[in-house]
Image 1 (tube, one colour):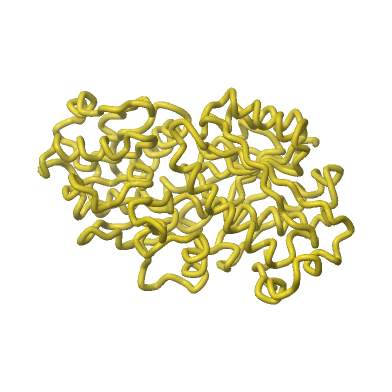
Image 2: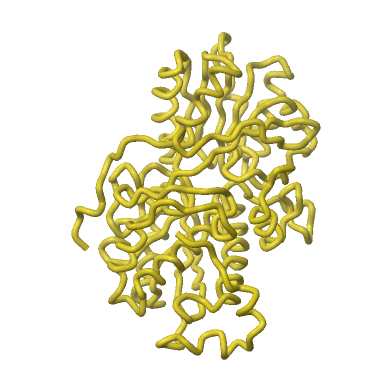
Length: 414
């Protein structure tokens, strides 16, 4: 897929001239299913900022097929039932061209069936393995962010070789957490390790200390991934429980998204490791595309808003919105998309994509899309906390993240 070009030249033109080649002056309307409230609100806020920045860049470059892009946002409350209602509202009331942006897996699972029934292309930015597992439908795609299974299988060798082979898991008690639960065990066992205990915690929990006594004494690595408004409490209580004497910690950055790494009480994280989709703290070898993206979304070199250093981003995930919007752009242009009658052609155009080179459209890094499973694969990062900063110490290859197909959506009728 080609990189985004022409933005600077187009931006110098008056607004009316940027879209004069379009067959229609009507905007491309993208329904943004946003977690404005509920346990996903922090993600929803930053998904919104990344979306706005991407749309601004796309529109400055002439839009999609010469038409401006318009975002129609609706709050789903991070709730599956409301999610399905939002999808229906997009299709029947707002008359959007595609739906986009859903993060939390239980909302995706609750919403995707309705998108399929309404024949509305539904581009999710979730990480859940529910897309590639085959449990959804041909109208649901995840082309801008990798899934948990690919992340976990590429992390497992580092965990067992560097940190230890006896692993205890702490994960949220719903679909996203179950993807971790189900993928990590086989991945660790394949490296000669074992899972000693699996501890599921409700994502709405506000205190976590009562769960920690379940961690076996011979645990060498505590693998943690937690989400929601209680994440700062979670990591603080984890430190208080172990008093700096516990097992090695390997966390997914979800446990610290929207939380400053140098917050009081988090000193115990020094020397621990985190998975990051895109590194929150700027790295010395960041590409020019990564730097341009960081500036465009208004984030400083520590991952906080330029306007407020206390407003920490969900940087490990929100790039998926930026990249997915550019995939939608490329797919619509390849399909000659003119309206809802071309939705099937759009999906087929995206299914035909394969290699996505690192570019301004893909600042997180190069990716490979599997059109059969509707899932993208890309590089993963492991960072170590050093002096209050997240320093990348390992980056996987795309090949490290691949796994056998579980579905072929291209065989399903539209």
